[in-house]
Image (cartoon, rainbow, N blue to C red):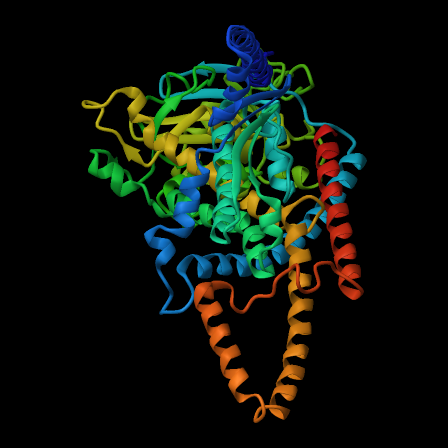
Length: 626
């Protein structure tokens, strides 16, 4: 049965995108005209003063690029870094707490830089292999279809989407994937994407700003921007102030963004996998669920709409119980729900055995297993009939990247076969209790397609055929049951929204930290690598100078003892005025530019990292198109 379901999510994303930018452009045009009219009615002097008085400025750079800047946060950030209680705290009477905090960030960034290079190299090899596989493949995945039917005991749902199948393919085959809303990112989660990406970008830039303020660098402005569908943030620092800082201070500023993203990722991980928010919601009246996940919303576009009710507890997907970590999908029910639906590729991943079906029940009408681009779920007009193959046969063909063939395939009523449990499960024909039984499993129209049994407490079973990622997108769940008598349906979804937001924040925080740690052109890693090489070269030079000065000092120690005392007292006073930088070397005094071997090392590493990053980006997009 044909359907336009596969086009709805991308079409909705395009409509939202167009409506957003039409609205933004209209608002700016109206504001511009009002501002111009106001300026014409004022004196020239007042008109010139108005722009300088505004603490918040918005600018439409182009039709698809808007940015908002403010100077109102500069003083609060400077106060936090220089005058607040935490700024005055010291570590065991030594360096200030914030200095030690951002120095730890330098070490973390160096480790992440090495890790990012390893990830980049692995991803480059994976993308090359993926492109080779796609170019040599003899057939493309089939498009999607949607049908729905119901029986007395079991709801039979068939649903697949090209967007979800494409995303699942990318997810399971690539370490790095392009993020394109509506294609590789579900448009249904567009709000989470924009919000979490903006939060991660803002956390990144606030890190740079705090570290800069700690080094007494003036913060001119902070801002956020939206370019197309990609939000971001930036900080405008007083460049000459930064150039006069020590190399150590510049390193802390350069690494602070990556360090903040690493910390935000750790906090998001505690929310997603550690239940960090659960105690707060429990105090507000929510009840924790440990034996599954609670349904808080089902999309009206989903075939499961009306089958899974709000408040239902899903405790099992196929043969995987959501409260049991024995199958390796994670210990927490929410983690297992996400892993089962988004990372598994074959029925064998979640179904430990096949199903016994009587050969005489084969109702092949000659159309059930005839799958094509037009009829990906078969040409049979009866949606209750589904194509089956011998247990294990489908996975073997998937592993060989071949199109499923109709050889040795049979057609059964899907609900009749999958409804049977216990003794009617098998791994081969001999495991079935009767002579004429065969061991089969459902055969999906997609290589990435699946048939899943969804078990809930208030319904025996619902059967869902297609891409499991579509199920993950359409059914929103949580591990907290809301007190429905005291909160509305919107507030009941609040924990699920927070958990989903935390999942995206975790993903983008890790991506921000690893991406910016790459020593490629125009990324933070580029500046960090240069400053590290400068710092190492300067430290080596200062050590040699210190040894030479020590020898000269020993030779003249008796003659200049009084002068040495004066110099020592002066140095002590200088150190006490700014002890956080007393062991650092100033960039404008020693080796401000790389030279010799350092310059060659910097050029080779940055060029190689940039080339690998460009290959990953271009290769990922090409693989997506293919």
